[in-house]
Image 1 (tube, rainbow, N blue to C red):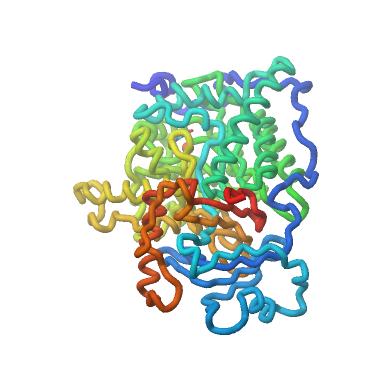
Image 2: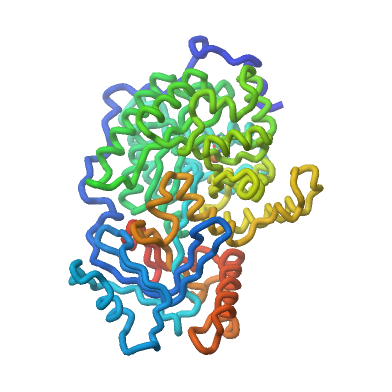
Length: 541
Ligand code: GUN
Ligand code: FE
């Protein structure tokens, strides 16, 4: 029996009877830690019109992997793609790609500022390609120090043994200025590190959980802007933690904190841009009173804010929800009752959904964040993702779920999503309610979920996730030939330009390279990263 089961009442308790041991923030300690926007946002620094040339790979639709060779992409001074020309053949005429661009580009526009050119020569740089930035739709920034800790501890015990303790470091009860300084210091250290790590792995946008603490959550929003990553900032909301009462808040404290964070994000975003956005984050039903769920549903609705939470990760957790919310037919119906399921909702894990719940999630147009490394590490289960995508028509994205998950890289999550799906395919059919072959995810499925699937989940499908005119240039340059990396490409595996390789052969060779990237690549192959058209990581410099 877990501590959760021992400590929770079998019937849900009205909030008025719950005692909260919450953070007491005295007014002297509630000063904000940052100043209003002061041009420190890396992803809005001034840039010149930039022309990119090379192989561009993306997934414009589920199960469609597009490889565009010899492609020119123009990115304007707002970081927006405003020119795409595919299959430019350098040997077809005297013009270079740049001269061609200048002759084609709308002459009324000002391109006198065209200076920087990222030129990947398709006849020489055969191991390089551009790919959209990854989108991580479920990650706990505050749990970063715990990566690798707690193997095989079931969810509810894992929370009380490891997780609440590390999150509490960001929200020590504030009795003195020393306490404030201590938590700010920890937050700066941990939050800077995880943003650096994820960016360096090609993640240009992520939906984060922080902790219940508003001051360090606001600091986290500032750090996202400073480092140049798009981010959804989720202060964890939880007012019903009987299993670990030192880590919870009251409903009114939660309301006050949410207002602070909403105002702060409005204040720090650069003019005309929304790079950081608050996201309504009920941690999960077992830790929220009904009043809190109702408030959060209303808040999201009134302020047009996205929502993220956990659902059906672990069978004990599902039982607990049944006990706490006996009036609801299912876990999903609990969230639905409080108006927390809609187009802007990201449901993390969703491993053990009934068919009725799948229909509800699909009908409400929610997205799932699949977190395979976490699901393996803490033995939560194997989500039938291919079924969700192709039969239930649910949008599925990917999450690292640090630190239930042990890796900050979405590339690794693509790999594990595919491997878990293969394990599912080796199981008895009746366990997974579908034919075995239908469980297997392809590389294209994985890459779709890591980019456009993620963009849909966070409500940015028209802004990022693929290369298209009008979208922002959030991208990574991958090089499989980078010295000292883990990827080895042999001469006969290179996709030569033009004559030597027919188009089909060339495409097949690139598909093979994508296999090498997903199964043996890592952050060393991600040599440059752009967010909003701005170069934020450059390992070639
Ligand atoms: N369910 C509630 N909180 C958490 C968390 O922090 N991580 C995971 N994996 N599941 C949760
Ligand atoms: Fe999680």
